[in-house]
Length: 620
Image (cartoon, rainbow, N blue to C red; front, top):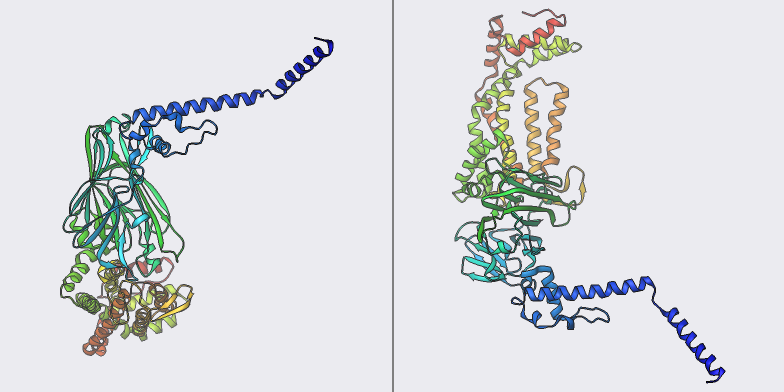
């Protein structure tokens, strides 16, 4: 080998060494490649363990070598078998239920049609046969995808939600269907639904078999999640929003509820008996056979738009006890129906409390007087406008003694009106002196200035009770009378192309008639008594304010108040026909002659005491 050959070989060697050094991977690149290789081996090992663990449940997966499912060049996992392995990784023993085809089964009785769905093993929708929405569509509760309902729990360290799984039908007949989630080896979860031949309730039982082998021993409860979007069903979206919220009841207490006007959530710290998603005239309520464990989390979410049909979203998260027995169950009921007082009361669960009939004495008036009369009249299959008329007459007759007493007191004040105006003019600069003189006049004449107010005050519970009864009464819903198409909501003789602040975008004729009759009634009463000018201004302002308030309210209520005013006119005309003002005046003059014989009222005594403390002489 000559000198040139040796130099050539050395140069080639140098070039190869330099190239090797130049092209050698960096430390970071070597670490990345090692990490990638470790990940590939980890994936292969994990897939092998999963395939071996569930070979009996999904045979095709076990039959395919994991090595063939991974292309090491780019680690892309794209085969059907690999997809099943991914489902195994996500759902464990319930992976076979992660995919399927949605199917429906119908349960029906004389009142409802319940559509069941194998996806989630739940109620898909409930159709109420005897009711329509304001635009004459069927009333649907728990409608389609607007509702979520399912168990949430961990199996083999995987979170599972039954709402996303496809159940198999284990058995079914005309009234019952059993949906099953099979976990293999005679382990399963059953959802059994039964619709009785009558009524609005659907029995619901959850049964566990062999789940104690899969669920961690430190798990003492499962979560049952229920979420529902509340969709518009009534004509007035404002009224429907204002009466829709979540109600709940503890086993030994009255029902309570979240806010009706804003979003709110609450954790119920003790066991609960039922939770109700309540709308203006309908509700869906989940009732425990025993009770739901604590805590139960409830929430109502207010949607601000007044044009969208979505009113609110209501949520409830229940705690279902789990005691790790080989077989155990939890029983419940769904009520899906109207807010009808007698129907809810017959359930004997306190659910009638969700109907806002008023608190205290106002609720008692509705429950023990108004509703019984209304139900009795409703048996005769009369038009509801006529029923309201008869109901108004009946109530006015019951109040007739009080009305007569109030009229007589007002008549006496009318006779004294000239003398009262004279005293008011004489002492207009000294209000205390004027009041002292007026009290002296009342005492001499034997007139109680509060005699006309007390009967009116005693009638107030009935007036307020009716204010709560009409908007809450489902019996009036979509019942027409004269120009009113629905007595449960506002009547409109003219729809405006714009909205007037505090009034609205329509004209309610019953509200106008009620306002006019109230103004006339106020005018007639003011003519009979000497009224403070400021008070008189307030007396006329109130009916005008009611014009704006009642314009969007139940036309049945405006109609009732209008009838009550007209009947009051008739009563006053009747009283005037046989009550002689001259006779009343003579009686008052006779009383005035018996000076000092009239006993002072406590109010007069207090007024005179105040006058004496301010330096006024006591008028005998």
